[in-house]
Length: 67
Image 1 (cartoon, one colour):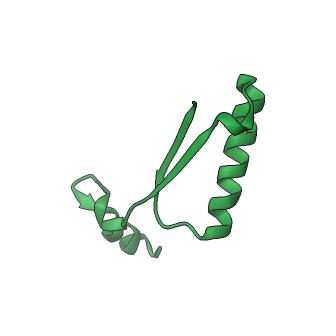
Image 2 (cartoon, helix red, strand yellow):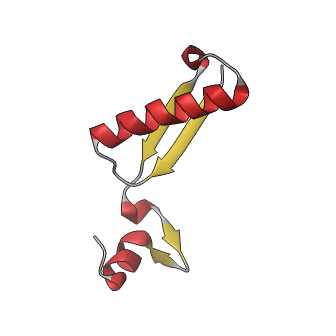
């Protein structure tokens, strides 16, 4: 059973549904495996759970003027 995992920030329900659908479709076409065989996991993380350059992502985004 093929497994696809995406880790990222918060994603709304409609985008999750589209990601799951498109990941499954493309992987099925590429690998020649039926769509029903795929499992897709979307793991959402808080921005304070990610860091780079010694800073949490929420601070980096705030400094850049992003949410």
